[in-house]
Amino acid sequence: MKRKVVAMLCVVSMAAAMLSGCGDSSGGSSQVKEESQEGTERPAGEQPSAEEASEAAPEEAGQGDLEYVELKWDALSYQPDNIKDLDLIQAALDEYFKEKLNCRVVLNPMTIGAYLENVPTKLMSGEEMDLITINSDVPYNNYANMGAFFPIDTIWDEYGSDVKSLFGEGVWESLKVGGHVYGVPVLKDNCYIMGYIYNKTLAEELGLDMEQGWTGFAEMEAYLEEAVELRNERFPEYAEMPLMMDGGEICPYWAALERFGAGEFAVCNIPGKEVAREFGTDTVFNYFETDAFREACLAKQRMVGTGVLAYDTDVFETNLLAEPSTLLIVSWGYTWIDEHLFGDNYDAKLVVFDDVWTDGGNYTGAMTAIGANSKNPERAMMALELFNTDPYLATLMRFGVEGEHWEKDAEGRMQLANRNADVGNVGWLQWYGPFYGNLTIVDAPESYGGPEGVMLRKMAEYNDEAILAAHMGFVLDTAPIENELSACNNVVSEYYGNLVGGRHESPEAVNRMIDEMNAKLKENGVERIVTEVQAQIDAWAEGK
Image (tube, rainbow, N blue to C red):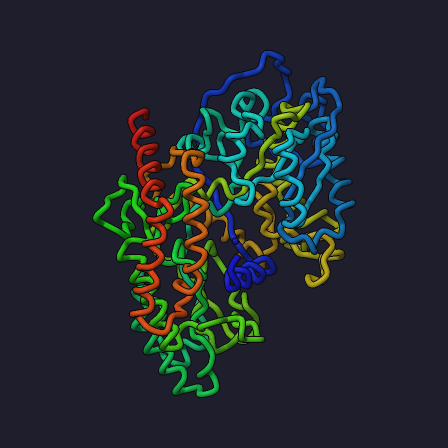
């Protein structure tokens, strides 16, 4: 899931229910290493339990004649406070991987601070690493270009063929750097599922229809202005409270843009969701120069003025998500929610905008790679396949050990229990665990995955229906424009927060700040960024 409101949304969603998804299948070619080991692959779709694996013959369990090795996974922990029982998780992993692959995978979950302090340094120095979590703080393309990762497509036919079926060919093409794939994305919410969660209780009290088929927040502005007046008239005690909680960004909350790793300085329209129709879908443009960006900032300024949005959410000591005065909360990625997602003060309901969409960035933000200098890349590939195809492991990594952290009731439904019975002081709970492999095969309690796993099914539907960006196979080489990107990012950081937060005193001030920002962007090379990205896309298109 950054900014204040987004952080609050993430905290709540971690404790309640978030998301997942799946993609279509495809084949692919790869270079198979000569040292073939027969019988090491598990048949596609076969998911034996740990007990079944231990009783199976070596070939059936996936061991064959594999020599015992130890691997290490430098992992980013999604909820670092919820890993007290790491020793129990490690013991379960040891048992399972010994039975399945005759190896040990040592899990090293890190806080974001420890991750940023250690992982980039290890990658830059060429230190031996096996499995490695990749997120936006360790950009996949950049480190792949540096040679930090092992090219998994050179060995996956022999040691990880099931991994290839997780995503379609367009996705794998979009992950190629220098002709090779270097990481496996987490199969989860791999598209922009944008919408809002509204306070059904308040809406009914005010007689508001919150499901009118809007396609975006800009269309809702006039209605929300009327709603805040009605709310304040009916409940004067709410007058100082914002009506709506925003996400703090324009894209993807207010605008669909195909971004290539150059921020909003160089983007393309998403087919069917064009924010700047004059450019079509193949022309690169600077979003900050468009009328669409200007109007979004002006709308934010107006909505702060009318009380729809807060000038500054930090001044409120209460959790605005749970306040009965809040009518609307922007959402990203939700496919199902419990009606008390944000507490017992009101009943909540989810609305998802039509035409979800995706781009390459939805795959590189949560991945697992193999270190370039791993001594056992083949075995690491086998372990990576298991983490992404085995429901037992997928569930273990999120909810812990059966009997220790969860159990099933008489109807066979999963329930948190024992060491996870107190959700405020759990032994191991990593929902939704976007860095721990395939989410779509997890067995989850109903309060997390919805009745009969509806959340996971809906995620699959949205991923399958998502509009694809026009350049899914394109990977930007940022090296020629690194200086310009750095300079332009510094310029935007000076203006962006106040503009998208609606904090300027008048529309005139908004226009003045946007003009000033764009003038500085030109001085710092934004046009060169656009030109370079366009040239690379054109060359890529010609070579298809």
